[in-house]
Image (cartoon, rainbow over all chains, first blue to last red; front, side, top):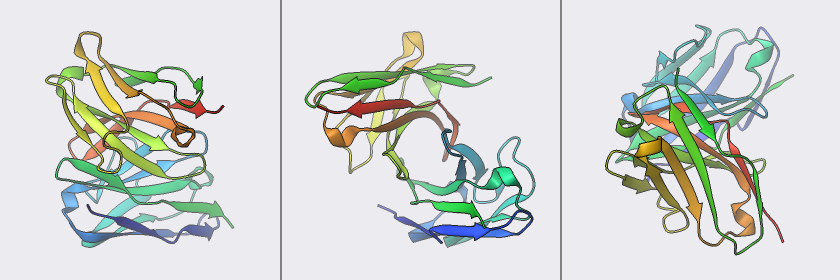
Length: 108
Length: 117
Protein backbone atom coordinates (compact mmCIF):
# COMPACT_ATOMS: atom_id res chain seq x y z
CA UNK A 1 0.00 0.00 0.00
CA UNK A 2 1.41 3.38 -1.01
CA UNK A 3 1.70 5.92 1.80
CA UNK A 4 1.59 9.64 1.00
CA UNK A 5 3.37 12.05 3.36
CA UNK A 6 2.60 15.74 3.08
CA UNK A 7 4.77 18.58 4.32
CA UNK A 8 4.69 20.88 6.05
CA UNK A 9 1.84 20.00 8.39
CA UNK A 10 0.97 23.68 8.71
CA UNK A 11 2.07 26.56 6.49
CA UNK A 12 1.63 30.14 7.69
CA UNK A 13 1.68 32.76 4.93
CA UNK A 14 0.13 36.11 4.07
CA UNK A 15 -2.24 36.93 1.20
CA UNK A 16 -0.27 37.66 -1.95
CA UNK A 17 2.56 35.29 -1.04
CA UNK A 18 3.48 32.09 -2.84
CA UNK A 19 2.67 28.72 -1.27
CA UNK A 20 4.52 25.50 -1.99
CA UNK A 21 3.07 22.25 -0.63
CA UNK A 22 4.82 18.90 -0.88
CA UNK A 23 3.54 15.34 -1.22
CA UNK A 24 5.98 12.43 -1.05
CA UNK A 25 5.01 8.84 -1.88
CA UNK A 26 6.50 5.73 -0.27
CA UNK A 27 6.93 4.25 -3.75
CA UNK A 28 6.69 5.57 -7.28
CA UNK A 29 3.29 6.87 -8.39
CA UNK A 30 2.32 7.38 -12.01
CA UNK A 31 1.88 11.09 -12.65
CA UNK A 32 -1.48 10.24 -14.17
CA UNK A 33 -2.63 8.97 -10.80
CA UNK A 34 -1.83 11.89 -8.48
CA UNK A 35 -4.46 14.49 -7.51
CA UNK A 36 -4.82 17.42 -5.12
CA UNK A 37 -7.91 18.60 -3.19
CA UNK A 38 -8.84 21.67 -1.20
CA UNK A 39 -11.09 21.50 1.84
CA UNK A 40 -12.40 24.68 3.40
CA UNK A 41 -13.85 24.56 6.94
CA UNK A 42 -17.30 23.01 7.01
CA UNK A 43 -17.21 22.09 3.33
CA UNK A 44 -16.69 18.95 1.29
CA UNK A 45 -13.34 18.54 -0.45
CA UNK A 46 -12.95 19.98 -3.95
CA UNK A 47 -10.79 18.58 -6.75
CA UNK A 48 -8.07 21.05 -7.73
CA UNK A 49 -5.47 19.16 -9.74
CA UNK A 50 -5.49 15.73 -11.39
CA UNK A 51 -2.86 13.88 -13.39
CA UNK A 52 -0.30 15.74 -11.23
CA UNK A 53 -0.57 18.96 -13.25
CA UNK A 54 -4.01 19.36 -14.89
CA UNK A 55 -6.37 21.87 -13.31
CA UNK A 56 -9.94 20.72 -12.71
CA UNK A 57 -12.82 22.65 -14.22
CA UNK A 58 -13.18 26.15 -12.79
CA UNK A 59 -9.90 26.12 -10.84
CA UNK A 60 -7.99 29.43 -11.12
CA UNK A 61 -4.63 29.38 -12.86
CA UNK A 62 -2.82 30.51 -9.71
CA UNK A 63 -3.02 26.82 -8.73
CA UNK A 64 -0.47 24.55 -10.38
CA UNK A 65 0.82 21.04 -9.82
CA UNK A 66 4.08 19.40 -10.73
CA UNK A 67 6.26 16.42 -9.96
CA UNK A 68 6.84 12.81 -10.83
CA UNK A 69 7.87 9.51 -9.31
CA UNK A 70 7.71 9.97 -5.54
CA UNK A 71 7.77 13.78 -5.23
CA UNK A 72 4.88 16.05 -6.12
CA UNK A 73 4.20 19.73 -5.46
CA UNK A 74 1.16 21.97 -5.36
CA UNK A 75 1.95 25.65 -5.87
CA UNK A 76 -0.36 28.59 -5.30
CA UNK A 77 1.29 31.55 -6.99
CA UNK A 78 -0.41 34.44 -5.15
CA UNK A 79 -2.56 33.58 -2.17
CA UNK A 80 -6.08 34.91 -2.04
CA UNK A 81 -8.04 35.00 1.25
CA UNK A 82 -10.23 32.08 0.11
CA UNK A 83 -7.16 29.86 -0.43
CA UNK A 84 -6.54 29.42 3.29
CA UNK A 85 -7.75 25.87 3.79
CA UNK A 86 -6.50 22.29 4.14
CA UNK A 87 -4.96 20.61 1.10
CA UNK A 88 -4.71 16.88 0.47
CA UNK A 89 -2.85 14.86 -2.12
CA UNK A 90 -4.32 11.55 -3.30
CA UNK A 91 -3.00 8.63 -5.31
CA UNK A 92 -4.61 5.78 -7.19
CA UNK A 93 -3.13 2.37 -7.78
CA UNK A 94 -4.29 -1.28 -8.04
CA UNK A 95 -7.93 -0.16 -7.85
CA UNK A 96 -7.33 1.49 -4.48
CA UNK A 97 -7.05 5.12 -3.47
CA UNK A 98 -5.29 6.83 -0.57
CA UNK A 99 -4.83 10.36 0.77
CA UNK A 100 -1.99 12.18 2.41
CA UNK A 101 -2.57 13.49 5.92
CA UNK A 102 -3.09 17.07 4.72
CA UNK A 103 -1.38 20.45 4.90
CA UNK A 104 -3.16 23.29 6.67
CA UNK A 105 -2.55 26.64 5.00
CA UNK A 106 -3.22 29.37 7.53
CA UNK A 107 -3.08 33.15 7.49
CA UNK A 108 0.07 34.56 9.07
CA UNK B 1 -24.96 18.98 -13.63
CA UNK B 2 -23.53 16.16 -11.54
CA UNK B 3 -25.02 16.07 -8.05
CA UNK B 4 -24.63 13.68 -5.14
CA UNK B 5 -27.30 14.06 -2.47
CA UNK B 6 -26.59 12.34 0.85
CA UNK B 7 -29.00 11.36 3.59
CA UNK B 8 -29.22 13.37 6.78
CA UNK B 9 -27.27 13.30 10.02
CA UNK B 10 -27.66 10.28 12.29
CA UNK B 11 -27.28 9.79 16.05
CA UNK B 12 -26.96 6.16 17.09
CA UNK B 13 -25.97 4.07 20.08
CA UNK B 14 -23.07 1.61 20.11
CA UNK B 15 -24.12 -1.77 18.75
CA UNK B 16 -26.89 -0.38 16.56
CA UNK B 17 -26.97 -0.82 12.78
CA UNK B 18 -27.07 1.96 10.22
CA UNK B 19 -27.33 2.48 6.48
CA UNK B 20 -26.68 5.89 4.93
CA UNK B 21 -27.34 6.77 1.32
CA UNK B 22 -26.10 8.84 -1.59
CA UNK B 23 -28.25 9.54 -4.65
CA UNK B 24 -26.51 10.49 -7.87
CA UNK B 25 -27.98 12.58 -10.66
CA UNK B 26 -26.83 14.41 -13.77
CA UNK B 27 -24.61 11.60 -15.04
CA UNK B 28 -24.71 7.91 -15.93
CA UNK B 29 -24.78 6.42 -12.44
CA UNK B 30 -24.44 2.78 -13.40
CA UNK B 31 -21.15 3.09 -15.30
CA UNK B 32 -19.20 5.30 -12.89
CA UNK B 33 -17.49 4.13 -9.72
CA UNK B 34 -18.88 5.75 -6.59
CA UNK B 35 -17.40 5.48 -3.15
CA UNK B 36 -17.07 6.72 0.40
CA UNK B 37 -14.52 8.80 2.28
CA UNK B 38 -14.41 9.12 6.06
CA UNK B 39 -13.34 12.16 8.03
CA UNK B 40 -13.14 11.69 11.77
CA UNK B 41 -13.50 14.82 13.93
CA UNK B 42 -10.58 17.15 13.38
CA UNK B 43 -8.77 14.62 11.20
CA UNK B 44 -7.91 14.08 7.55
CA UNK B 45 -9.58 12.25 4.70
CA UNK B 46 -9.61 8.46 4.73
CA UNK B 47 -10.63 6.50 1.66
CA UNK B 48 -13.02 3.65 2.49
CA UNK B 49 -14.04 1.93 -0.73
CA UNK B 50 -15.92 2.05 -4.01
CA UNK B 51 -18.59 0.23 -5.96
CA UNK B 52 -19.39 -0.07 -9.66
CA UNK B 53 -23.20 0.03 -9.69
CA UNK B 54 -23.59 -1.78 -12.99
CA UNK B 55 -22.32 -5.10 -11.60
CA UNK B 56 -21.78 -4.27 -7.89
CA UNK B 57 -18.03 -4.89 -8.15
CA UNK B 58 -16.72 -3.54 -4.85
CA UNK B 59 -13.26 -2.60 -3.57
CA UNK B 60 -12.42 -1.78 0.04
CA UNK B 61 -9.53 -0.14 1.79
CA UNK B 62 -7.51 -2.94 3.41
CA UNK B 63 -7.73 -1.18 6.77
CA UNK B 64 -11.54 -1.04 6.67
CA UNK B 65 -12.38 -4.35 5.02
CA UNK B 66 -15.06 -6.16 6.98
CA UNK B 67 -16.01 -3.15 9.08
CA UNK B 68 -18.51 -1.68 6.62
CA UNK B 69 -20.52 -2.76 3.59
CA UNK B 70 -20.85 -0.71 0.42
CA UNK B 71 -23.79 -1.43 -1.86
CA UNK B 72 -25.81 0.21 -4.60
CA UNK B 73 -29.28 0.09 -6.11
CA UNK B 74 -28.85 1.04 -9.74
CA UNK B 75 -32.61 1.23 -10.29
CA UNK B 76 -32.75 4.34 -8.11
CA UNK B 77 -29.19 5.65 -8.69
CA UNK B 78 -28.29 5.29 -5.02
CA UNK B 79 -25.22 4.04 -3.19
CA UNK B 80 -25.14 2.97 0.44
CA UNK B 81 -22.71 2.62 3.32
CA UNK B 82 -23.79 0.22 6.03
CA UNK B 83 -22.71 -0.86 9.49
CA UNK B 84 -24.06 -3.90 11.34
CA UNK B 85 -22.80 -2.88 14.77
CA UNK B 86 -21.63 0.69 15.30
CA UNK B 87 -18.82 1.70 17.61
CA UNK B 88 -18.03 5.08 19.12
CA UNK B 89 -15.01 5.22 16.85
CA UNK B 90 -17.35 5.28 13.81
CA UNK B 91 -18.28 8.84 14.73
CA UNK B 92 -17.28 10.86 11.68
CA UNK B 93 -18.40 12.77 8.63
CA UNK B 94 -18.90 10.47 5.67
CA UNK B 95 -18.68 11.76 2.12
CA UNK B 96 -19.81 9.94 -0.97
CA UNK B 97 -17.94 10.83 -4.12
CA UNK B 98 -17.79 9.91 -7.77
CA UNK B 99 -14.51 8.25 -8.70
CA UNK B 100 -13.67 9.05 -12.32
CA UNK B 101 -10.54 7.17 -13.28
CA UNK B 102 -7.79 8.13 -10.88
CA UNK B 103 -9.51 11.26 -9.61
CA UNK B 104 -12.45 11.89 -7.29
CA UNK B 105 -14.28 14.63 -9.11
CA UNK B 106 -17.67 15.15 -7.46
CA UNK B 107 -18.50 15.01 -3.77
CA UNK B 108 -21.68 14.87 -1.74
CA UNK B 109 -22.34 17.31 1.06
CA UNK B 110 -21.47 14.76 3.76
CA UNK B 111 -23.44 12.79 6.35
CA UNK B 112 -22.48 13.23 10.00
CA UNK B 113 -22.74 10.03 12.00
CA UNK B 114 -22.54 10.30 15.77
CA UNK B 115 -22.31 7.15 17.87
CA UNK B 116 -22.73 7.73 21.58
CA UNK B 117 -24.29 5.95 24.50
